[in-house]
Amino acid sequence: MLDLIRLGVQLRSEVQGNRIIGHASVFNQLAQIGSTFERMAPTAFRSALSDSGTDVRALINHDPGLVLGRQSAGTLELRTDAEGLAFEVDLPDTSYARDLRALMERGDVTGASFGFVPGDDEWSNEQGHRVRTHVSVRRLVDVSVVTFPA
Picture: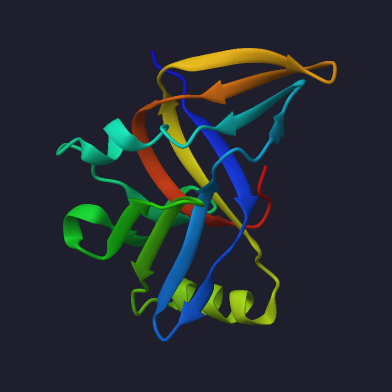
């Protein structure tokens, strides 16, 4: 069985009309996961995003019952840029999406995250810490607006 990992970043996004626009991952940013640190290399999402079988969902707090958008429905767009994994999601007309929009506009929800199945990685020691750099992602599962990012 493949391990699913979730990493988060501070949300670098905004609500524009009925869309959330931002980054679910920022390249080369360290996140502490347990006793190690992890980061995403700029190459990490290339193969996952180019795989025609990829159908990522946008969720709230990684909850599959709180769907915001989906690639195959055309309501979620993903791409990489110089900063990281960028996303744009068209918000549905649901009570939980309206609530999320209000919470983001107030600044109560400030994080983003993504769930993935790891591919290739590299390990290093930096300033006495073990650091895992994800060079590739085997499968991207979700991008989520979250309360507590890693």
